[in-house]
Image 1 (cartoon, rainbow, N blue to C red):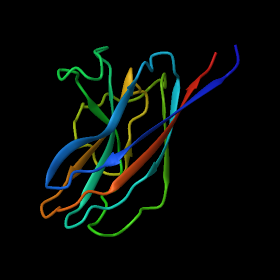
Image 2: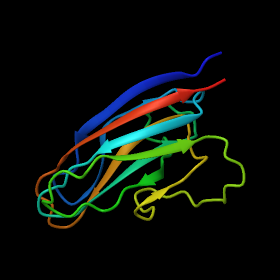
Image 3: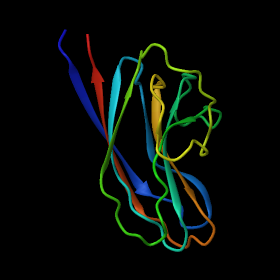
Length: 150
């Protein structure tokens, strides 16, 4: 069996007021994949700072199920208000890394600049938290290349 790649894009606006929201549509059916390479093109919001997270889930529930449990796997560096587009960033999550330390599962609170390895579940989504003063969201584009290896 050869290595296979499957690309996805999640895009949408971050919240247009203080608070949190899912950006775009989640992707699911990722159980067979061993690695996710994620390229994010993040844009600032107007009026308030913005935190963007990639979240995963292990519970096997459909992504439209409101009881699905999500947790942070990537926390990007906070984006200052009205700072415009952020340079594209690249991160990789690999399933099956041994010796990874136990991690507390968080939602929207993982420390900025963190990538948790061995935390690739059955689904991925983009989650945004807009700070006080936010009056308009920014366009977020996240390209995900899933890798299935023998």
